[in-house]
Image 1 (tube, one colour):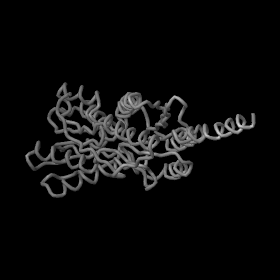
Image 2 (image 1 turned 180 degrees about the vertical axis):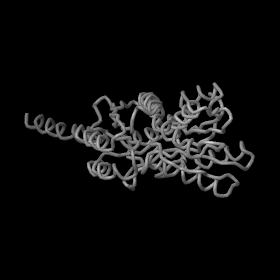
Image 3 (image 1 turned 30 degrees about the horizontal axis):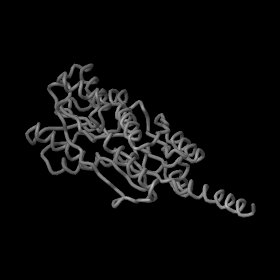
Image 4 (image 1 turned 180 degrees about the horizontal axis):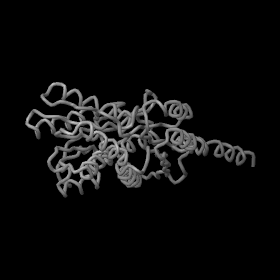
Amino acid sequence: MKKLIIVALVLALLVPAFGFAAGRGEAADGAIRIGMSVPGLQFPFFVTMREEAEAAAAELGATIVFADALNDAAKQASDIENFIAQGLDAILISPMTTDALVPVIEQAVAAGIPVATVDRQANTDRVLVHVGADNVEGGRAAARFIIEQLGGSGSVIQLEGTPGASAAIDRKAGFDEVMAGSGITVLTSQSAEFDRARGQTVMENLIQAYPNFDAVFGANDEMIIGAIEAMQGSGVNARDKVTIGFDATPDAFAYIQNGLLDATIDQFPGQQAGQALQILVDNIRTGARPAQSVIFISPLPVTSAP
């Protein structure tokens, strides 16, 4: 009888130990719950990223617990705190800005929850991995496209993304770098906060200030579509201008098909999210860490729908 009691006690101690080894918060059936936060589903790019991330997670035996930040950094931080409180296995974040999410990311890591960033980076080395497009190279690619289309001379208006967002900073840096060595004049560069309505308003004002422009670069598709609508509403034929966006969204391809947009930069959101999720799941299950802490996917200009 004493032997049976001892065996029962040993088994009772071993079961929690084995359960913990299976992964932080991982269910008994091996299911993994990963919190995912993006700046906002008002941006079609993040709608695509969410859909493809959920499909990739299902293939990996994981479930996405999703939170929409609604373009509010404070809400995004609160959402991450909720993920931590729920004891999720991992967190995948596309942070609104480089600095706003740093404290809560480090809080999650301190709680034993691995964090990966995707598309946009955070200014901390505590993340397990960042997977994203090389946004500097994407900006360069947009500049090269405009230079080629204009034959090396002319003028361009640049619409920047959300101030402080890594994607906005990097795309502008790459674009400016290439333009500085060209014969193209950058008339002005202003933020339209990655927003279509804001892009339209900003462009309406810029058409008045700089009526003789030859090209427009929008650091995402929403802004370039807003700019095209501003041109059409102001009596400027967008087909006579060189226009390029960034993100390869369905709306961008519709504008390309209608001849109103020349190109968009494809940065493969599903591939970004899929790679980051694979790394998180491997870390949860085996403790594996990626060989590189930053993985970049090369973005490419596309001029027709896939």
